[in-house]
Amino acid sequence: MGDYEPERVLSAPASMCKDPLNISNETSGVLYHQLRQKPLNIVGGKGSYLISDEGLEILDATCGAAVSCLGHSDKRVHEAIMDQLQKIPYCYSLYFTNSAAENLSRILVESTGGKMSRVFISSSGTEAVEASVKMAMQYFRELPTPQPQRVKFISRKQSYHGNTLGSLAVGHHVARRAIYESILTKNVTHVSQCYPYRDMKAGESVEAYIGRLAMELEDEFQRLGPDTVCAFVAETMAGATLGCQPALPGYLKAMKEVCERHGALFILDEVMSGMGRTGTLHAWEQEGVVPDLQTIAKGLGAGYAPIAGLLVNKRVVDTLTRGTGAFAHSQTYQGHPVSCAAAYKVQQIIQEDNLLPNVRVMGEYLGSLLREKLGGHPHVGDIRGRGLFWAMEFVRNRETKESYPPSQKIAWTLHTTGLKPQHAISLMPGNGGADGVNGDHICLAPPYNTTKEEIEMIVERTVNVIQEVLG
Ligand SMILES: *Cc1c(COP(=O)(O)O)cnc(C)c1O
Image (cartoon, rainbow, N blue to C red; front, side):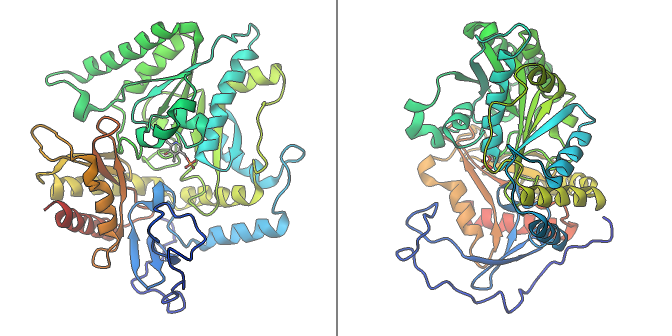
């Protein structure tokens, strides 16, 4: 792990503690996620810990939403940000380039072995997904023989691809879509996830199950008209909405084959699963497929600055280069120098500290400990994951796999219970995984530089929280 060992506080520096905001929910100007409740106020962070204004040290077992993959206090990233601020904080990407964006894009392209040849840098995963949809549309319009009839997208149920109207339509997060259904584009349809716990039939082989999923996608192409489909979009490893579901071996290959047969693009959303979270820098490296377009975000800048990217395959770049010669999409903060400098340093640290092997080894350890301590729990239906990305799906009844009623808010209760001082752990709750509405899970996503001792503490605290809520 190089010579760098993140400091791990067990007592927060006095200057950080006891710095309570003299603000209540009524006097705050912030539109909190839960409007009726002021969340904990975080005043500091060190290693894997968040420090509240009451001095509570919360073990951040999820890096927020699988974001802070180096922990919260890496001085090297702080310095890179300060250096860039002193050089140039911002320049408009329509007129100029900058060395931070150049450096970051170059190492990203190199990290794919040149399979992806250019990068469009935006500020959020949502924007990267929107850009991928627009890029796919433009690609078909600028082919030597244009295919403007390709206007439809196929993605998967219980998937999440972002929260603006375009990306929300691509995904299938039932709760987040609910009140907007009537204004979401009808050009997206959804096929089943690869979700063996609930969808693989008793006695069915992996090959037969994958064959069935590929046939479902083929049927959807046929139903829509194969030459009207622009792209198929999938998370390489399903993230927060379904709950850390890795693809079965051969599944993504089978899905890509269907796309190729019909000339549609294959888009992988690695906003959550990419940049090392699953043990390889790109999650697709473990699947034997290369996407045409790939989105990345959460681990890219590790939370030190908002940043995301759309990696574009050579074939698509070449088509646009010979076509209009410009991507018909841009945003003010695209390629932001400070964000790029932060992400460039984060990516250098992941390489220099050799963190990916640690993700794989600690990930195996986390998975095996969860299975050992919770595999027999009457309300833990499934434990699944890969790398440092694991979920537990909770059920009322293990035999029937019956979920808890959504009104019981099991996952959210696990999250809030974890934040009590006696547990002091942040867990990532999810619901609707089973069928869009029912199903509760929590995800764990520790930082890439986590240690054996920390994994043991995460599992111990998680078990205690589950016991308090579910017995
Ligand atoms: C989080 C997420 C997004 C959206 O990213 P934001 O940065 O929240 O806009 C898109 N796709 C996947 C798979 C995600 O997990």
